[in-house]
Amino acid sequence: SYVLTQPPSVSVAPGQTAMISCGGYNLGSKPLHWYQQKPGQAPVLVVYDDSDRPSGIPERFSGSKSGDTATLTISRVEAGDEADYYCQVWDSNSDEVVFGGGTKLTVL
Amino acid sequence: QVHLVQSGAEVKKPGSSVKVSCKTSVRSYAVNWVRQAPGQGLEWVGRIIPMMRITDYAQNFQGRVTITADRSMNTVYMELSSLVSEDTAVYYCAREIVGATRLESWGQGTLITVSS
Image 1 (cartoon, each protein chain N blue to C red):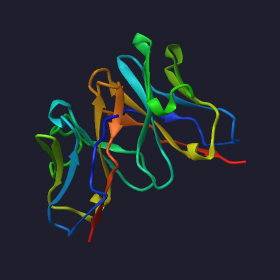
Image 2 (tube, chains in turn red, green):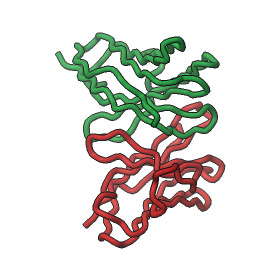
Image 3 (cartoon, chains in turn blue, red):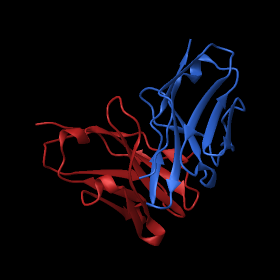
Image 4 (cartoon, chains in turn purple, cyan):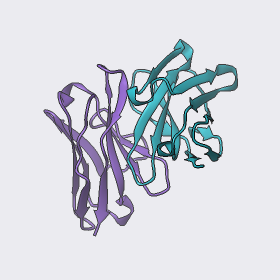
């Protein structure tokens, strides 16, 4: 089955830039999406199709992809950005949604 | 404002079944089910495309999960059978524009506790 790999944790000081990676085989051929989940809440889509932002998501959130690695970048990090972040693709070989293991972003 | 409204929390015995509902507009959408065990990550369970009568299930749940839709009631159901303690989790429904592969809107979640 298809696997997406994320670092378990990332720490950043307020005002700095956080970068969260997501890797997978042949990831370049698959649209990739990012979700933010705060404690006790449902996930929220923050980036879709590698680099597009849903309405209402601050411009500080951006996505990119190079080869088999995608990156979620959060600029000017705020305390309210502290959350778990998940990447996700649709695997057409197995007809399944696949999530990465999640990355806990800590704002120092 | 997109709304997906799920049924309430339940406590189930091992070996029993649970059926969770999700009320949302299903026209042109797929409805996915995703679960999250306590302290764990997101795990996809399956989805239904009501207008096309198509279902896809995660390999891990094949044979144990059934997702159905009542289009007239704009409600989707996820039934999980042969429950074990490891099925204790929050179950979310999430809506997807067919073919878009992203889960745009999520329900509030339903806590299912499996305990003897």
